[in-house]
Image (cartoon, rainbow, N blue to C red; front, side, top):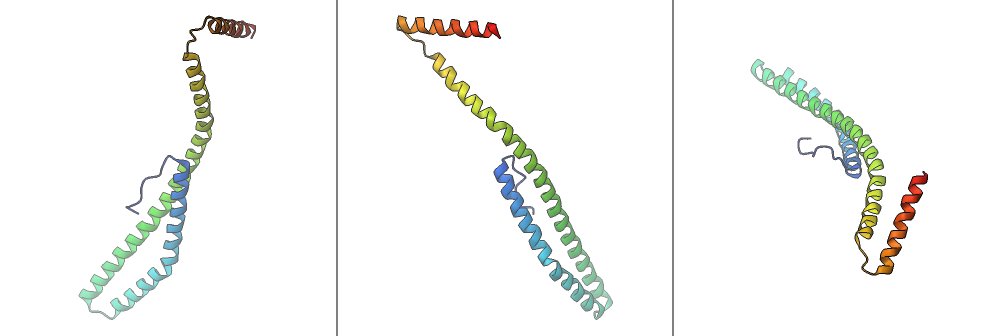
Length: 140
């Protein structure tokens, strides 16, 4: 868990991170019977050990149980955070796409407008186009 990167802002990346997290959660769930078996075996060993060893074994088992519970809780929290992030990233992407397209179109229009013709006929044509645009805007 500590080696995982924070949730991404990119929808595709966070979607992949969520799939990885679901796989990790499934692995943790699959390992739960093994952990429970280990606890059972630890209790049996502690029952047959002397007092000093019993305390040591019980402390180790408690530590292991706490670490496993923290790992499971962290995995669940991360999955919830990724699901929330994915929803926000998807909404952002849906709004960013049309805006990016519009910006690209406007950039091309501005680039076309920045070319100033030197031929008098082309200049007169631009003036007429400009007058038509201004006149049509006044009608609305």
